[in-house]
Image 1 (spheres, rainbow, N blue to C red):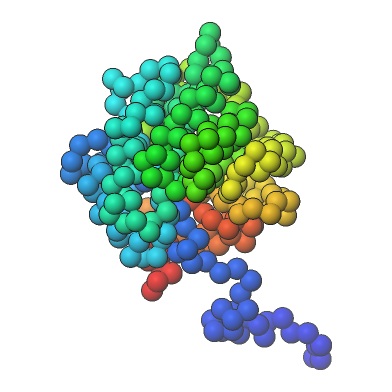
Image 2: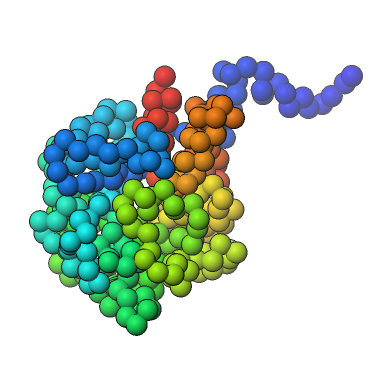
Length: 325
């Protein structure tokens, strides 16, 4: 049989496949989320996220050093706030001696080159578990934005390289940029959760930080998963307001949104491979239904292939080890 084109020639062996691969995954692509707790020598496995832990600052530093040695250049910090410090104002979020602020300083002192990104949202600090201030049963926008700006400034003062607003309030990127500029934090970046959907895949994360909403849900501020055009509008507004990096969350169920935004914007695009996506792979692997290592790399490659320049993933360390083999 005579064929002008035999496509299988470029699939003959691993060397050829690697040579012509359209998408390359490296540890430089990863942002490693870290959960921080008070105390010393604390390491608590998260039941719904097997082999993932909430750690005290001292053990977090040890973990960050290992991540750096594997080629991972960025971490994204989340803290577990003590119940007695939670209220409806979020004031603990901008406490200069708060757990987040102390963690930022400790990491930057130990590994100055590591890019430290910080979660900016009120849910860990809220008695209601919502991302904003509650008034008469409503999550109010403008007072929340003022609180988020204070929180962002506090993180910048502690040494954060990027603040990462994950709340989905209207107008918060512009106000955060304004307060950072006003206080001369002109080198602090903003990675905006620009298209964060109201998703069931966040469940294990809320277990990790005890931040599930105490009433209702988050659908009045997080996006409807039925919508596509809205994600583009939200992202373009955030860029106009000063976002340096934009994020889509979750990742695997939203590959189409990642590609749409990548094709639309000229800033780096990140995606969050969220806790539920992590837990699904872990659960299936534990039951022998799929190969965990192969599933990790295929999943992360699909996210990058869709257009993500950066991937926040709980598999960051595992993937880096696999890629470094």
